[in-house]
Length: 132
Image 1 (cartoon, rainbow, N blue to C red):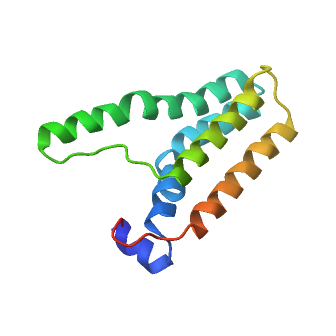
Image 2: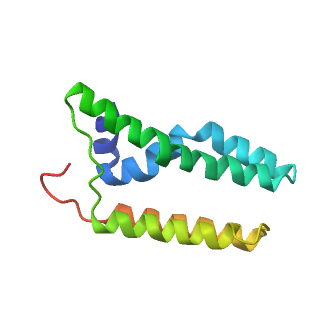
């Protein structure tokens, strides 16, 4: 199970939920985005990548909250300040990179560097007892 793998690998549940699960869960979309980018169709590649994030934020999360209420298992969006800052930083960087409608390798490197920094931050973020 996911909990056993997380414990065996020595990862925190926060890192697993924020970094590992999205990479594995969206592998098909990542492959599609890379494939169309290699065919020089950057607009489609960016729309696949950004569309997935928007779908989660605007559809899946609200549906899960409503389903949780109906099932008697509340799922609230209770984020700590660290997670909120990470989301704001990611949105600002993605917005600045995509605002001009063009992209190059340096902007891609900036996005990968931001992802690596956020990944390291979530990996080394201290675990708060009682919230796991």
